[in-house]
Length: 414
Image 1 (spheres, helix red, strand yellow):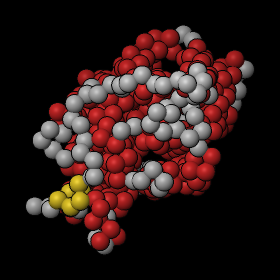
Image 2 (tube, rainbow, N blue to C red):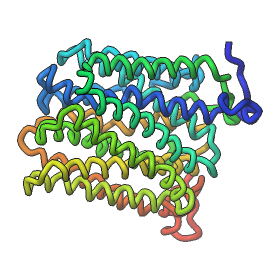
Image 3 (cartoon, rainbow, N blue to C red):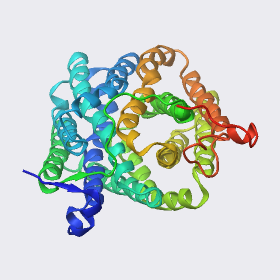
């Protein structure tokens, strides 16, 4: 049985058994399953299940239901450690990904997607909490940037193999899903067995806590979920439906994206550490606003597919900056709120995400440009909200509103 070890003593362990190594292994395992699933999904559902925009919208609505119910992870944490929960959820994600090709029907894909989504969202909730507990405020931006790069590298390897081997060896959807999901499961089992159970300094609350002083973070999370969901559901689907991209083309596009993230993420981490979260957010949201306006232009001016591909890569590069939201929250939050707030933020993130895909699927059938302009409007709202982020956020200095109200203002108790 794995022993319990205080986090303060973890530096005595060999590097391969330290907490940061565990975070890096999980950062590699998750995209092996999820990113491969994402790369193949649109071609698979169109070729094997005959999906249109309506069916893909419903599929992603079902996929987001576990995200809306992410606070349910707190019930599991009454009997399981977050570290164990994260490993088990990676096993669920990998297993569901492995069998995806066995269910080439609307009902079957809804079922297996729901199971994999439970694994993904509950893992992400625990993983985010562990990152904020195990990393100091000083090291978090740089390490989070390296974790993004590690995940991108794993995806790069997977995508590179698909691009090189899909036609050369006549690979099947079944083989690729089984391989990628199986590797995720193997790494997760290693994580569960090889590492001690690390005990963080601050005991985590296991009840739902809403704090008024976190309101700006909550609002960012809700808008992030809505905007990102539009991209995840419809951007890659457009590449297949409108521009007829094949499996190897879609995968090559994602490969380019992850190469870019692998190169830029560590630099982004250093940028956040030096210049602060507000500047990073303004760059992120301004870039995303331009990207979604560009998607609308694809339809207004009947632009070629290579422009759509460029916008796809640009969106993912800007999205890589989003870990600045985590570091902003880490600086303003009570250390004992990390677990409950990670679960709650996932639920808030998915409030709109559950309803948007199905509803926008019907709009997509007649006016796909409207879908992307809605996303541009969300990014514009986030630019305005980012202006409220202080240069040096901290507990008691969560937003610039305090500065606007003058030096005599004291925040209300929470």
